[in-house]
Amino acid sequence: MKQGLRVLVVDHAPEAGRKILISGGGRANFTNLNTGPENFLSENPHFAKSALARYTPHQFVELVDRYGIGHHAKAPGQLFCDGSARQLVSMLLAEAEGAELSLQTTVRQVTQTADGFLVRLLRTGTEFIVATTHLVIATGGLSIPKLGATGLGYDLARQFGLSVVPTRAALVPLTFDAEDAAHFEGLSGVAAETEVTISVQQGKKRPETTTFRDKLLITHRGLSGPSILQISSYWRPGYTLNIDLAPNQLVTAPLLRANARRDEGAALAAWAAVLPRRLAERLLRLAPPAAWTNDALMAAEHRLHQWPVTPGGTEGYAKAEVTAGGISTRDLHAQTLEARRVPGLYCIGEVVDVTGHLGGYNFQWAWASAAAAASSIAAPGKSPESSKRLAQPRLVS
Image (cartoon, rainbow, N blue to C red):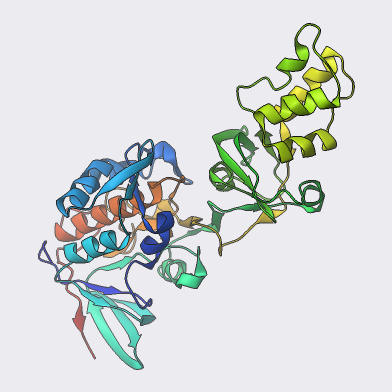
């Protein structure tokens, strides 16, 4: 490759970059210009800082521009390809010119040797063994199993003594419990601008409050849309979401004016002026003002800004965009992504306990963590643990 390395990329999928190809509606939200450590979840919130600082969104955009791939922003900082995400995959394959890509290849066994690792592989019915001085685990998480997601990366990490933070589906739609399912039956497809908040207690620490403002979508099974996908990464079973259905708006204002009409028709008109009419009708049916006094109207107003929903669960890994949790950052060097106690072993991307918000952050972590590992491997002797050898995979048998 361009850095003088011999590289073998093993993928059990029939084509490269399948998750890139389906992302962003087929246009790949490939980075976010506003990327910072605050956009990521991890048991160590500082871990991602080094890699993110050393390979920035602007560096990746420069690469995209060099290949003439048009792109645009759908929201502040979120960049998408103008055309197909296949352009991005083609770019990455071109950049990897010189590396061998082995598709439809299964990893059967990995063992550590005095010189590195032996990897037993199976491709089209033929088993073979490759010896390498460096091994990079870039297997992704458990999300979207129909694309071939497995727990291989976590199994390999445990094999080599690395800890794995319990995984969970993230950036995923949430499902209603039985009560809310009955309350919101028939509203599938209704969307509204909302602000969703959750407070999560971690051990003896003070509860941490997280809020996202964006669109919420009611589905036939529960809640989705950007605000829900974002908050889902923080949600735990049993926790309640507080949903502000009318952020920064006084819904009851028309009824509070002097000599205003105060009845069900006037209330519906006020609610429907701010919310989708079907949702306004349902909310008034579920929680109408207890009376037409100022106090009662303000109580109804408060309810609209603090609507509690306790999800029954999530749609699971099948609908999750990413996997939260993963290989513990405690066992990795932040500068290189190399395992602290296993020289030559690197873990990058989604398989690590670093999970980004919605909006291109997870791709940027993939690029940045890969760049950190590649720089370490290409500059032997600079990483704390690696021996002074370049990656040289070779066929053994």
